[in-house]
Amino acid sequence: MRLLLMSDTHLPVRAKRLPAELLAEVERADVVVHAGDWVDVATLELLEGRARRVVGVYGNNDGAELRERLPEVARVEVGGVRIAVVHETGAAKGREERCLARFPEVDVLVFGHSHIPWDSVAGGRLRLVNPGSPTDRRRQPYCTYMTAEADGGVFGAVELHRLPRAGG
Image (cartoon, rainbow, N blue to C red; front, side):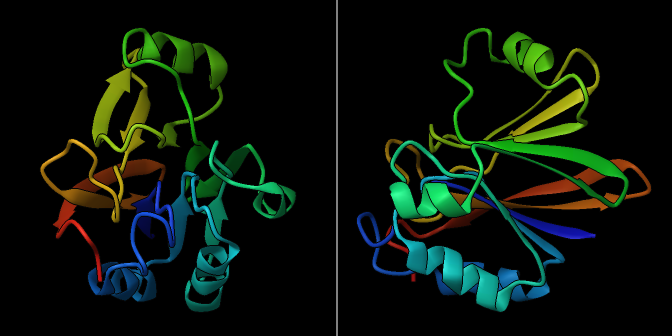
């Protein structure tokens, strides 16, 4: 199963549209995962209209309409891999220990908020990934998203993709 991981799209505030390269990945993915801060409902509806499956959560910048449609935490199983999605995990210091305690039943935690790509393993078992932002690089050198494979209970082949700053 091919996964497309993204977060912090902040449309139309940080960019007017999603980058074309990212939209092409939506077509290829079996599951699109969005870790919050959509900002507009149109982005959710765009992805729902193009993707085979969308798993998303709301973030701190998402208003009432998105909060009515999306959970704070999503839990799914894809390719035998137990995945949780949440927007915020707190400060980088102590993140791995906090996430191990909060999500003992999952294999992978996808999160956002910082716009900083992250890929680590906590406690020898919990994979933590943050795809960064495809539209707002903040202090990062590139806008980013990730793709990954999940099959037979294994989460592997994670790739960080770099995009131009403004998207589209």
